[in-house]
Length: 121
Image (cartoon, rainbow, N blue to C red; front, side, top):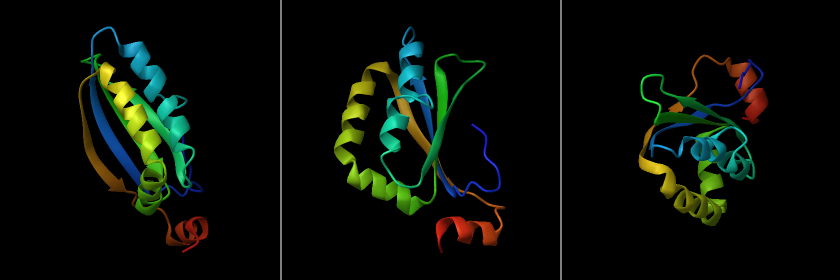
């Protein structure tokens, strides 16, 4: 996924996953940019996409980055779609050795004019 200056994402959520050996393809299908999680996130306003990356030294370790217009958009999605979020999360437990949120980040360096134009603030 590539972004340019016109993309107004301002917020991202970063997760790390350790996947059970032999479950990598199933995990990638669900967590990838066209997977079940991304399809669910698309129901929310302000979702820009997901990137999935695999560790080169540990093939069971992955990170996802979910791009959102704002923290408020992400939190609104989680409230409005809590049942679907919980159902997918429960279904995906079978793939995991562990998962953890590494952090939530805000974008820096986007010009104020573009940010205000895109977010309506």
